[in-house]
Amino acid sequence: MADIHPFRALRYDVAQVGDISDVVAPPYDVINEQMQTELYEKHPCNAVRLILNRTEPGDAGADEKYDRAANFLMRWVNDGVLFRDREEALYVYHQEFDWAGQHFVRKGFLCRVRLEEFGKGKIFPHEQTMSGPKADRLALIKACHTNLSPIFGLFPDSDQAAQTPLETAISEMTPMEATDHLGVIHRLWAVTDRAAITETLEVLRETPVFIADGHHRYETALNYRNHLAETGKLADENSPANFVMMMMVGMSDPGLAILPTHRLVSGLPDITSDQLIAALEGLFEIEAVGEGAAAMQECWDLIDADGGQDVFGFGTTADNKWVFARLTDGSLMTELAPDQSDAWRDLGVSVLRSLVLEHCLKNNIAGADPHCDYVRLLDEVTEAQQNGSCQLACLVPPAGMEHIEEIAGNFEKMPPKSTYFYPKLLSGLLFNPLDQ
Image (cartoon, rainbow, N blue to C red; front, side, top):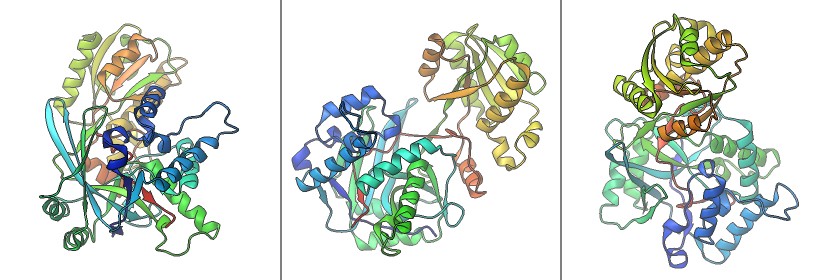
């Protein structure tokens, strides 16, 4: 079983900071330079100063921003801006939002989970990671000795039995509430009732945990723990650095929304729709849809209505045309990805990467060296094609919960950016100290 515990969180004192909405921030990896500046200006104690401290004129080196983040954290604790809860708790976390005309409330709880090396326990990753972000996050955690943002974990819970005792416990409690820049409402309750906590943890006794989001931060927490162990600074198996702060959401939660991440492909010549069709010939059934944003929307509607992993929308920037493509012969995937499972090979993003980009385009388009940028919104696809920053736009179907569970359960990792769980978890609702 995954080893799950309540904990004593460090959090903002509302009496000092006012509206919690002013001090929370999205995860660091969705904050661009403009948003970073806006968050800095929103409140002098906004969490962005911790999770993504900016480089300042006169910095002696790259590590200055990490040291500055640590100094902010220390100062806010000393000044009472942040306080440590006296009792251990599981923190119920609801996110209320609208998407595509539907209203959702995603429910889960924040806890601390014992770190495990992947493949050696009950915690499973589902996406590949990159070394750059892990080096950045490791430098930050070494400076701050604190989990500044939660990992997003999923667990099988067909009858929502783990969440139910906690929902009962908060029924007459007032939450801490924040609204983010996208209008998502975030509510947090601290549950200290021992009976409710025990009942929830008992349900989770034999449950695996699948990391939905935060792979880089989870691996960074592992690396930090190992660093402390190697340098003789990890006292014992119950030292706080053996654990990581995690949001737990049941896979059957009605508010759990998985969105696709579309690909913008550059490194190609200015290919036309006819050239693309010729490159895919024999492997895909292709339907010409039309031109421009309306055709792109129609492609997406066809993908969404189909619900399968074998359908795609392709837009060629050179002639502004869109086609809808359905895989008819995926037999080459066995040759192209021989070490992967059938479930991995059947995944839409796997077919796109291995068969379409690495095989069809490289072999049939002279000079093709495709590489991808990633976007979530169709408007971002339109913008990229209008400014000519890609030669090909690819709309992909979203992976389902069953794909994550099966592929991660095989100790495989999906291609990068295979899933997008909306909305993101806020940084700044809670922090988890690792040195006491």
